[in-house]
Structure formats: C-alpha cells, structure tokens
Amino acid sequence: MNRGSPDLPPSPSAPGGLPARGKPALQPSLPEVHRSVELDGRAGFWRKLLAFSGPGYMVAVGYMDPGNWATDLAGGSRFGYTLLSVILLSNLMAVLLQSLCVKLGLVTGRDLAQACREHYPRPVAMALWIFCEVAICACDLAEVIGSAIALNLLFHIPLVWGVCITALDVLAVMYLQNRGFRYMEALVISLIGVIGICFGLEILFSRPSFGAILAGFVPHAEILRDREMLYIAMGILGATVMPHNLYLHSSIVQTRRVGSSDDAKRDAIRFATLDSTIALTGALFINAAILIVAAASFHSAGRHDVAEIQDAYQLLSPMLGVGVASTLFALALLASGQNSTLTGTLAGQIVMEGFLNLRIRPWLRRLITRGLAVIPAVGVTLLYGEGGTAKLLVLSQVILSLQLPFAVFPLVQFTGDRRRMGSFANAPWLQLLAWGVALVIAVLNGKLLFDQVVLWMK
Image (tube, rainbow, N blue to C red; front, side):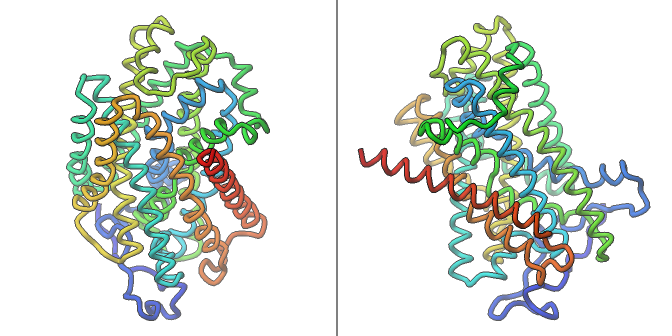
C-alpha cells in the first residue's frame, strides 16, 4: 500500500484554504494511514464495495462492545423482549448518524473533532473535547471490565489482574498500525465473525419465541413510564449510538484515496455509507441476540434478576442443557472486548489530535485513557467484588448516552451547512430527520436526568 498525500482540501471555514484566525493549520486526521488505501476507479460494483468495506465494521464494533452486553442482559432478563424496539430504533439512528459522518469526512477532509475546533470558539471547542474524553473513558471502562470478566470466566484470572492485563492491548494496536490499516480492519471483521457465530448458536440453543420477538420490536409507551425500564433503555441507547464513533468514522473514511471531483466524492459516499449500513445491520443482529438469549433463557424461567455477566455465564449451560453454551458466551465476550479496544485507541487519538491539534504517541495516549478507566475498575472490583461490575457497566453506558447530544448536534449542524458542504449539504427532509433524532436523544436524556434527580432527592 502506498501512502497518499497528507494534503487536505481547503478548509470551508477559511476562504482560500487559510487556517482560521488564531488557529494553526490542521494536519490530516490519522496521518500515518491517511489516504493509504488505493482505489480503482474502473472497478465494478462488488470490487468497489470490497475496497470501501472496513471502516463501517470498525465503527460497528462500538455497537457490540461489553457495555451492550450489560444493558442487553439486564433488559432481557428483567423485561423480556420489550426493549428490542429500543435496540432497533437505536440502530436506525446509528445508521443515519454514521452516514452523516461519512459525508463530513469525505467532502470536507475534516473529521468531526477538527470541524468543531475550526467552527466554534475555543472555550466551546474545549468543552466539547472534555465531554468527548469523558465519553471515551466511560467506553474504555466498559471494555476494561468486559475483557477482564471474559479472562476470568475462560482462564480463571482474578478480575483485578484481568483489568491490568487489558492495558497491554496497546501493543497489538501499534503492531497493526505499522503493518497497514487493512490488517486492522481484517482483524476487526474476523472477531465480529466470531461474535456472530457464537450468538447465532446461542439463539439456536435458547429456542426463543419468534412471535414474542416480533412483538418486542414494536415500541411500547410503557418504556417511558417505567423509570427502571427507561434507565436501561437509555443505557441501550448509549451503548448503541456511541459519541466517539461519530468522531472515529468521520476520520477513518479518509483512509481511502478518493478523487477530488464531485462525482468521485459522491461515489465514495455511496459505497462508504453502504459499508456502514451493512456492518450496523450485523451489529443489530448481535445486540438483539444478546437480549433475546437473556429473555428466552432467564426471563421466561422467572429469573428476572440476571444482570451480571458472570451470572449469565454460570446459568446458561445448566438452563439451556448445552454444555458449550457458557463457553461460547465467554468467548464472544472476549472477542467483543478486544475488538473494542482496537477502535477505542483510534478514537482517542482522533479526538485529541482533532480538538487540540496535538499529537502524542498513540501508545502514550492509550495508556493515559486506559489509566483513567483502570483506576475506577480496580477500585470497584476491590471494594464491591464481582457484584459491582454490572452496575458500573450499565452506568458507563448511561454516561455515554448523556454525552451524545454534544456530538450529534455539531454533526447535524455541519452536514447541513451549504457553505461547508456545498452541493453535498443535507437535503431539507434529511436535515429535518437528523434534527428530529438529535432532539429525541436530548429529550430522553433530559427525562433520564430528571428521574434520577427525583430518585436521589427521595
């Protein structure tokens, strides 16, 4: 693979390509892999789709990380199939938002973090950076705990040691980045395949009611009325539509060497959006499968209290009568945790470089983020043991959900701005739909905060 030119197109916010006043010119996002994947403009549909396949799957990883497991298990065991509708709606929101990320990155040559830095006053941009870093730390916390739990279940490694071991994943990330971006994409897709196979078998073993599954995909007003159900629903939303994925996707789509003409960009947007839509459909299957297995195995048997990943592991094989069910569950969890750490590394690097225009070595950036996640994970494990990990996982996903508006609102604003996007700006119907999604997320977050404040005051 030949590395492409690191030059960026002129900034829409700075006429003539000059940097905004008082702000130094931005370097390419992820310069070590920027425009490094060659494209053949004469290739047919399937070869083009293959060439663009990869970034969507790396983004989809965030939609099936260990945080999803905690919220999906809790939702399935406690409320049966009811929250499947939340998973579906969250996934549809994700498809829309990730398609906007594709447009932003390919049209402007900026990722979302860089666009925020260029567009907003410095205090606003710094606030958005802090919110995003909080979200990444919450996501990393879920990955740390999920991987540690998987190591404990498969190899009986104590949770505290497992938490520490997961900090070493930076070595794998650095090795793959040096080999080329396509190698990292290939590993991610392979691990997604492992997760999909494991849960496909789990569904066969659990024999769910397909009529109840279909009914579960229909939204229920009860979700908004029940405070506990809403809390888990918001956790599912936060685990599905993840703030850092919006920054990540707008950057990694730029690893393809796309031509500068409008036709080339339009073609690239088409195939990159198709890539992410296919990948997110796979994520929908896996998320729904986790909740379905929990509903069919635990809720239907009267076990409405299974929220711990460890409890699900211990109960699956005896309740399903299949000895390998628990092992498959833990293996999928380990693949999920390791996959998430790969993409989390890139997201952290993109956010720091984009908002601050500051570049430090990725392994150092990863260790800083991991340290912020390892400390609370170790503390909770030591103080509360295994029983506190599930609550911490669900809480981390709710924190992610609360950060969502601070990433979604700028994304919708930028992609609807004709001065920035030109002829690629969102059509009025798309802009209306995107603002509707952003407002739904904000309103649900507001209700969740209000309910929690009322609960704490009692």
